Length: 308
Ligand code: ATP
Image (cartoon, protein in one colour):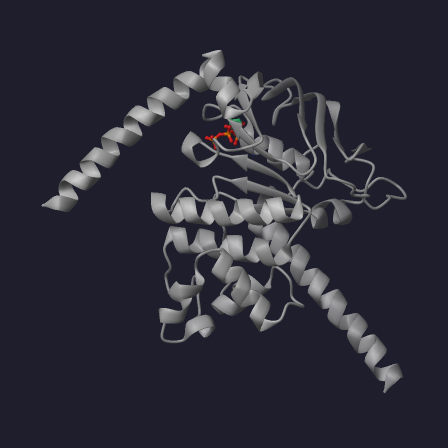
């Protein structure tokens, strides 16, 4: 029995690993875009995680060398902190996340995680340490249960449900005729953008990686659901002292971050906490005032039509 179960267990774990890495690849990147030039170094060491500090040192990068997107960028994402990256469209926010995942390599400078250049560690260990909720998560043609389960194939059904609860999607799943067995994806039931985002968050909560990146991960949710989901995510991050990076347009979703980094033209325009940046009266404070005006206008419109 022992002899038989060994290889089966082994195969099971290889299968799980394979599915896991396929999931990560598919979830994060459009497969055609995978850059085959990025390879493991000879004799790669696994990434040794301590607190999860991320550093960009003098990083220059462009998808085309003649058009740099990040220009001599230096920044630190402190271990165990919640950090937001904001800035105008196209300034390179998502690019920072793609570089961290080593989807591309920098042209100059280096990226360090807990002091290790990410080009020196095995890509498998790097990617295993990172969980991302991207702008648009593709779902698998499978049940809701499985779509969440991909986050950790060894998790119990109870854990899957607990993750869904924290991602504020459990109650909705329970109202479906087939509950967790409902088929989703292209050939299954259509679900809304906001529900998809919450499934992606459930998956990430289940995966429970040391480094968590959110790329406009809650943009399809209504304000109330978004705020409650973000509060849940924040409490998990705090509880576990995880390093997290939120890329965001709407400052209301990130103003409580430990650090806000404002990018402009491939570099850091300013950084600090919300209060510090408001006092400074720079780009962030202008953006905040502009968005608040819009928010108040929208809220007024919303309640006006709701009364009638
Ligand atoms: P947004 O807020 O609109 O999502 P962003 O700040 O996240 O923008 P990035 O997605 O990092 O911006 O893109 C930065 C720049 O790089 C943009 O000008 C974009 O057009 C360009 N870019 C992004 N991906 C690629 C790619 N695969 N090939 C070539 N150029 C790209």
